[in-house]
Length: 166
Image 1: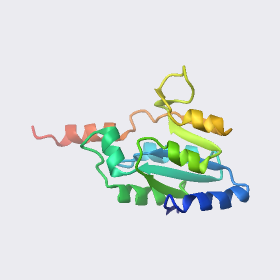
Image 2: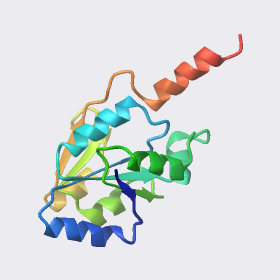
Image 3: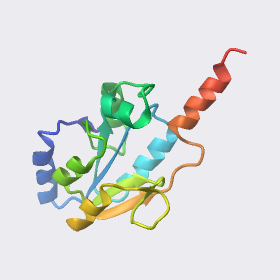
Image 4: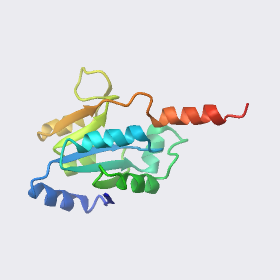
């Protein structure tokens, strides 16, 4: 089981595991309404290294990115749920719209994002703002395919459709 760490203690912890020779994997996201797609994604990310750090957007950045109706689950609960998952070693909250500052601080060996992002320019998907930073220090970017039909948006749509008054 993982633990929730602060941004202040994260650099020291990363230094310790890096000195021990661990391959560090980092991913980030909102992780609102945790579902099996998230779990499978995190398992795939963890398989790329020895330690998985997950950055979770705080409530304010989630609302900026996903709209005023989100998040559905508060940041403390999303972090706690993520930390309880077997593939996750550490969870850290952040308040920026991108994880660039965290990526710069951690400099993971592997930076992982979901298949809706593009690992390089000219590749299908949303541009990945952190990719250039990762490549600049010699890290690797991996894009993991999304689980079809497994998304928070899809889940919310099914709930609304099922429970909407007729």
